[in-house]
Image (cartoon, rainbow, N blue to C red; front, side):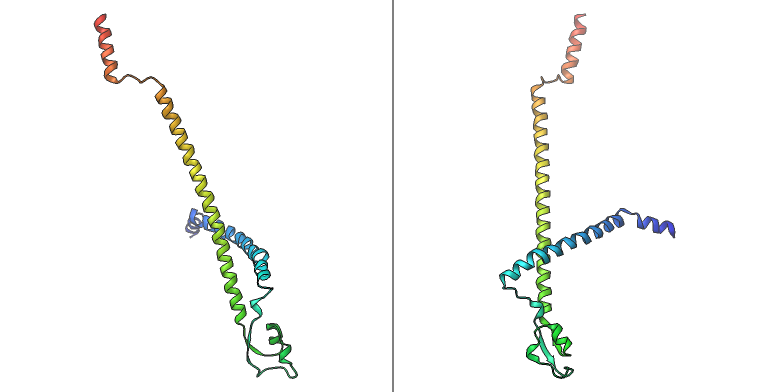
Length: 162
């Protein structure tokens, strides 16, 4: 059983997958920071600081704490503290926006990596073509080598002379 586990655990695919998970976790932190620290503040600036996560509708006042002024409740936390049952649709909207921002950020990074890979491949092809042309130029500069028939004819002629 240990041998089977060892074969499974140290196959290239499993190790590659583990490396992918670790790198993906680190990349996730970068993308989260990009969204939370750069993109979301810019959107907040554009929308005048609006935060969708605090949008809600009061569904029931059945468990409301006595003496609660409903007009003073501005956040979901205030509503929960007052014992109100709420539908927090703003949080859903915020999570959908965050999802699209993360997906777009990942798309942009992958797109940049793909372009860099394509440029590297183009550069490699150009270098290979230049090397091939250089070799062809060298071959063209060398005098043509005699064919086997020409060499045999030359040997025959030399033998006739002797």
